[in-house]
Length: 325
Ligand SMILES: [Zn+2]
Image (cartoon, rainbow, N blue to C red; front, side, top):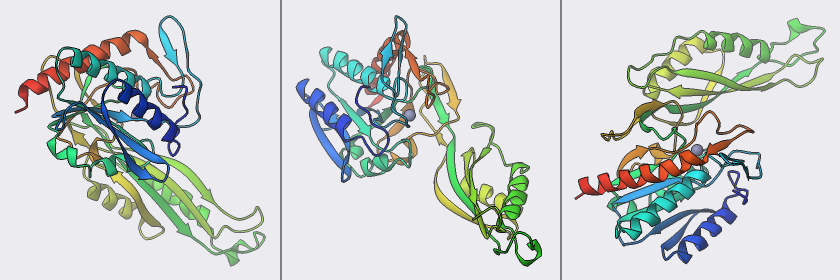
């Protein structure tokens, strides 16, 4: 946690993890994602069937780690450096019991477009993996479903004019506000298992100066998906009705994950690297800490939850290896 690793700046933390895991006797590969970004891929035997994974990057800004008796505070405490630590401890304890059929996968860029996961999905070891236990803060419950995310940009065009003569122009911002209001009133299709589809109009931009009728405007939106993309885009296009242009920036679909007896199970609303790691066997999702504390300036994880997660990861790996063939 002392090594900053905001998305795009994960090189140092990746080198640290490589050196640390090598010192423990793991075989470690750095998989290049960009000039200064590498996924960390570590294993004990040549063809691990169960992998533990999460991401090394964090949201900005970096926050120095601190601790008291009960909690560890700072950026990455629960999302997701505490998880990396818990997974490594779990793997090392399993190893002491003679279980070496385990791999560790740590990606870059999860907090932006999962670029690291997309590259990791091309790795030859993915085909040998039967189960991928991904870590994100789920309060140590087993997440059996996660919503998808659809990232969009809505753009409107108008005509610039002197603002004293508005009839000479056409305001792109007025159009964007009208469309945005219609978008806010859309009743998006929901799903019985994944829950409600929600839309965040997250960024607004446009205009040139106070005395100019704005010729362009744009709004960035993120929709938490519980259905395929197509019905959502259809509903949006109907609401926009030709008044603006919609660009799909990226999306990930909602995912169902493996259910395992003996764990608390639930559906989570956030998305993860899992939709982009389709070649890495059947996905599971579990981690200490709360997603409500992630991405905040008070990010923390309870030490007792971290410790509990070590036992849960060990238990999961053992159950899955017993199933694997
Ligand atoms: Zn995360």
